[in-house]
Structures are given as C-alpha cells and as structure tokens.
Length: 448
Image 1 (cartoon, helix red, strand yellow):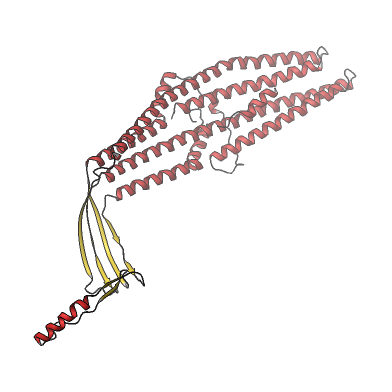
Image 2 (tube, rainbow, N blue to C red):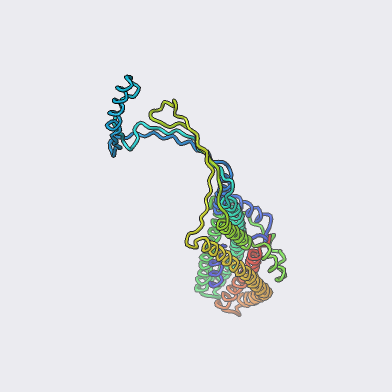
C-alpha cells in the first residue's frame, strides 16, 4: 500500500481540455485570462505590434527640428594678411582718383571654431524607393504572426497544466474517501478486539495491533492531505489566485469517452499545433529577408530631402535665412561580395527552418503515437484493477467472518484489510491515469 501512496504523491502536477467538465472548463478559462505566463506573452505581442508600427513609420517623411548654438574660445586661428597686401594699393588708387572709394582692409585673424554662431533649421527626408523599408515591414508582420502562435502554444500548455492539476486534486479527494472508509472499518475492528479481550477470548496485544493500524492509516491520511493542499495551491497558482482559494469538486469528466482514432489525431495535430504555425511564420520572414538582400544587391535607394532655417552669428534671424533642396541616391556597388554572402546566409537560415519544420512535424506525430499507446495501455489495465477490488473485498468479507468466529488470526485480518485499501487505491489510480493519458493525447494533438 505504501507504494501506491508514493505513486499518488509523485503524480506530476502538469495539464488540457477534452477531459473536461463545466467546473474544470471555467477554471481553464480563468487561467487563460489571468495566468502570468500568458500575460507576459500578451506583452511580447504588444512589443511586436509596436515593431510593425515603427516599420510602417519609415514610409512617412521624416521631419527634424535641429537648432544648434556654438560658443568658442581659443584654439586654432585663420590668419591672412589681406590688409597688408591690399591697403598700399587702395591708398595709391585713392590718391590717383583723389577720392576715398577704396577703404582700408583689416588683416584676417579669425577663430576656426565659430563663436556666438547658431544654425536653427528644419530638415526633412522622404524615401522615394527603399527596399529595406518595404521588406522590413513584411518581416515584422511575419514575426508578429510567429509571436501570436507562441502565445497559443502557451495557452495549450496552460490548458493542459490546469487539467492535470485538477485531476490530481480530484484524485486526492477520492483517495481520502477510501482512507476514511477504511478507518471506520479499523475503528470497528478495535472495538471488536476490545470485546474479545473483555470476554477473555483474546489477549490485549490484538487491541494494540489494531490501534497501531489505525495510527498508520492516520499518517497516510496526513500525507494525502498534504498532496491535496499541494495540488490546490498549484491549481490556484496557474489561475493567478490566492493559493488557499477553495476548489470545487466535479466528477462529471469521469464518464468521458476516451476512445480515439490515432490516424485522425495525427492529422489533427499537424493542422492544429501552433509550433508548426510559428515555424511557418519564421520561414516566411526568412523568405522576406532573402528578397530584401536580393533587392539591395540589384537596386539603389533613392530619396528627396531638404533643409530650411537660419544660420549666422547671434540669434538675430536678420539676413540669415537659407533653403537647401536635395535628391539623393545610395547604391553599394561593391563591398567584397558582402551582398552575395548575405543572400546566401538568408537562404541558409530559411533552409534551416524548413528542416526544423519537417523534424517538428515528425516529432509531433511521434508524440501523438506515444500518447495514444500509453492511453491504450492504461485502458487495458482498468478491468483488471476493478476485478482486483471486487476480489479483495470478497476476500476481506470471508476473513472478517472467520476472524469473528475465531477461525482467523490477527495478521490475516490486517493483511486482508490492507489488500482492500491497496486494490481501491489502485483502481482509483488507474481511472485517473486514463484521464491523465487522455489529457496528454489531447495536448499533443492540439484538440480544441
């Protein structure tokens, strides 16, 4: 019996839907709404959506306001003796013409770094033809699709985890009922032995042995309580609730039909598994990356732009206005075959993802086959487990009757009682194991 208790204690707390009931489905929907992992994935999708918006923004003109003001002191100077060169000539000309038309010029001695200088301007640039912008948008959209598929993968995991945690909780409740029933039987057994001792039919050691069995059962009940609280806390964690929140018990799903067609499940898994959708979106993004590199190698980027503003010494804005118009072309003609290498690199990435997709498809079908065979094996053990319970109970009734008539010893009675507990626990474990295996099959086949 201790082995069965250990199995119950070690059952994984991990979970999906088709094994369901109204109560369980409500918990699944609550988990899908409040689960922290899904909230993180929603934020990742929001980030990807912002990346798409940023990629779209590159199609619009870019307008920039960029004022600068410069103060300088010291440093290199530009010195040119223009006054020394021209002033003698100007003086001679003024004397010849008897005028002062030709002024005296000072030598140039200016700081190279401009002092008290400003450049207050608006600049704009608009891409006429830019393959980077177009294909970057396509790539970001594909990556958004892949991120959305990843969220659906997590949703599938959350469904599965909640279902298994709920099954685990229900399993501990059923085990507790089995222990409670057995404790009543053992308590009656203690009273029976007390009567036998009172009537001098047995010695006191039978009372002590019976009470010891009751204490062992109480220890097992304490272990099962711990397992129930653990399952309850984990289930509430998945729904982002307080760990001590009560769980509603619902056994409707115990009557579910677990018969399936493995070929249909394999096909359904290929159609529904979001891992495949995620890889296909990444492959499409890689195809856009290939096209981007090919277009970059063949075509230039063309843009128009301009600048207008004020420039000069001091913020006067008087006679400082200027306007500049631009049309530009950028085309990397040669860079050591870098473009050819980038194209090849993008193609390799696409081939890698296509190989991964083929592998994942086969892995998924293998998972479905393994889950189906495990479910089938579990189903075959249920009739044996039920038959074992019936026979253990019949055996106990016979031993109980013999013991009351003084024809069986204490050890034989206790062994028969333990066999009943073990058989009932094994039957319960088998029933829930079928549901656990069905939940796993639903998960790997992405049953919705």
